[in-house]
Amino acid sequence: MAENTVTKVDFWFDPACPWAWMTSRWVDEVATLRDNVEVEWHIMSLAILNENREMDDAHRASHQRSLRACKVAAGVIAELGNDKVKAFYDEIGTRNHPEKRAKEEGVLEEAMAAAGIDESYLTRADAGEFDAQLRESHDDGIGRVGQDVGTPIIAVNGVAFFGPVISPAPKGDMALQLFDGVVAAAGYDGFFELKRSRTRGPEFN
Picture 1 (cartoon, rainbow, N blue to C red):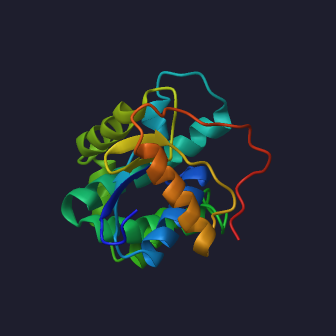
Picture 2 (picture 1 turned 90 degrees about the vertical axis):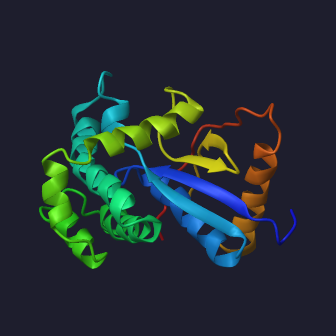
């Protein structure tokens, strides 16, 4: 891959998903190491994805908790832009996953404040003001990969996949090697799926 060729990455996330968090840390590492990688952050919702499906109470509760954050993110993307939603995802994701505080009262408001997002965005989100933007973003992401997958969704130069599902998030040269492999896979129109069973959970260190 030529060093001066811009590689566009689109990333769809739900803040509740630990696997999306892992993948986002890898994408962030790649973008830090390579100036020619541009990342645009998008929101999707596991609550919307699974709204008509049977699932256990714990997962449904997690998705519903995250729905408020998803709505806030949709509003932030629409009005404040890519850098601000990235800051918000960094803050809420850190609290949800490495700090394991997702169930704490006030954690969403705390993350918003840390990212410099006015509390009015939560009021507007709760009033349903950003529902249409959230569903549009969700449908855009899931429409690229199909209804039988979830988050993360990553698109490389417009070619979208579910995943990669990774743990831990690679750093340095290993992060770049994995990224180059994903770019190569995206470059072949006939590539659809490569999978094995997970043998470990998310490692946040």
